[in-house]
Image 1 (tube, rainbow, N blue to C red):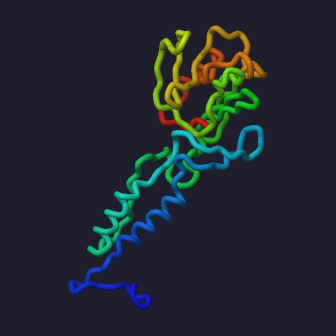
Image 2: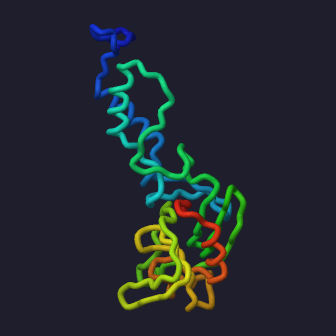
Image 3: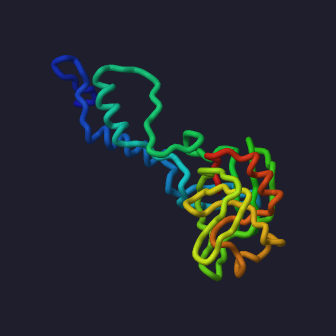
Length: 217
């Protein structure tokens, strides 16, 4: 602009400064991107916790949006525009977790499944072995696949499971028929290799309810 007025070329079209458009898009991304950043989350136990990182979230495709604005605004187009994303959660906006998600409280060794705000499943679990430095990583991830009757393999083990829901790389939620007890402080010295071990019956129920893409907090 000049003197607060938009600058037009000889054809009457707006003159766009790419640097200003890039700055505008960068500001939008800083305001609304949730991927990889910090989140505040109200836990089932009642306190607000801060969670950082993970594979779930929204990330604006800044390059694509700059190109869109550089082309559409000078042409005088007026429309409702849904941005392009590199990554996108189930919901747009700052609260893209929504009210359907899995919550895993590693301090209390509990897992909860909420669907549209209703608590449909609660169970004790066993997470990664802290004494072996295999602790389950914190973050907001998501169920990216569902498989039946898998053999989970790693260095020195091959564990058959009936239900497998991976959430981050090789970390997932699954039944653990070799365990007779869950919860408490088992994870500190006799935890998993990083996965979320779940009682067989509870895992069967969870598997049938959860859809791929569901956030895992």
